[in-house]
Image (cartoon, rainbow, N blue to C red):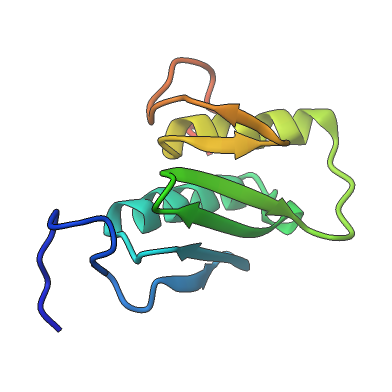
Amino acid sequence: MTLNIGAGEKVTEVEPSGLTAFGIDISSRYGKAGELVEMLEFCEGVAKLGLERFIAEVFYDSKAGICSFAVAADAVVAKADSHAMLIIAQRTITQFTWLADHVHFGRGAEGDDPARDS
């Protein structure tokens, strides 16, 4: 396989483009390395707080440039836990949807990071 980074949106940078991290399935539509790094950082952040059980899947739609999260089917998420996960997403994911709303926060957005001190 010839790797030509930046040549186009459909160039696969990483294979496999999906894996399981901290019990959470993650995948990037076009196997983009940066997207996988962001999702891994998110998974690590929620795992540090013991919240990984609430997230079933994280998917980065490379074509749209938006990451989405699937909550575990049997999950009942407390408001504080949901807020903590949102803050982690703001810190690690460039652009994402959260509870059906588009959120456009860059990585490193200002705010409290509950995982930072863990």
